[in-house]
Image 1 (cartoon, rainbow, N blue to C red):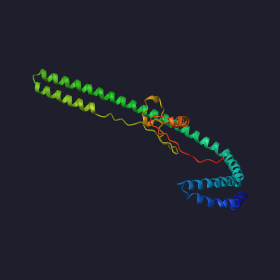
Image 2 (tube, rainbow, N blue to C red; image 1 turned 60 degrees about the horizontal axis):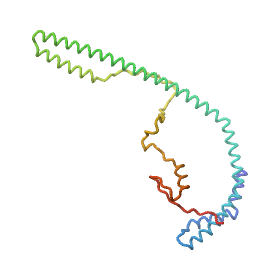
Image 3 (cartoon, rainbow, N blue to C red; image 1 turned 90 degrees about the horizontal axis):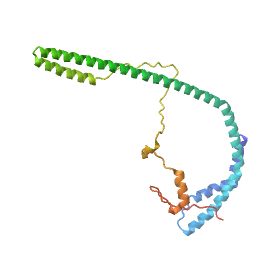
Image 4 (cartoon, one colour; image 1 turned 30 degrees about the horizontal axis):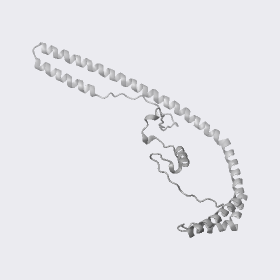
Length: 236
């Protein structure tokens, strides 16, 4: 047991500290339901106030000493720890920025490939459409209108199929680097607070509290209930 622990144990054994336990237990059994119990509670509260002062007198110097030692230990730890954490966080930012940029480039390349594939598919659609029109026109010119109509119907079906066909391209490969792992961290920025839904608005508790304390019973804020509670204070 060190010096601080010894001092704490010594204070704990003093009569005033030991008495406080019984007083607290008794206080916790009292319910104020009449003038008599109100007077008893007021008397007991004075006893508790004195015990509060006695406990502070017994422990405050020890708490200050422990706090001083605690602060010194924290400062020594921070001297070595803070630069390590700062360097680690810097590495995380550098890695995250590089990975974000690499992913952005990969997404940009994927969109480029998709645009190229869409353009190619559109070109093929137009070529096929022109071929079917020319084929139908030639057949119709030869006197076979029924076959020409069937060719045109086939062209409509082909065009609908091509129009609904998904554009599939192999996404650019982003190589994984051993030892580098990432998680997604989605962020936001409010660009127009005026159009935010009410579910995302926070009441201004500071302003509401100030208005209630100033205006008291006259305070009338839509959506806010105002009431007064009595709080016991030290008797003069």
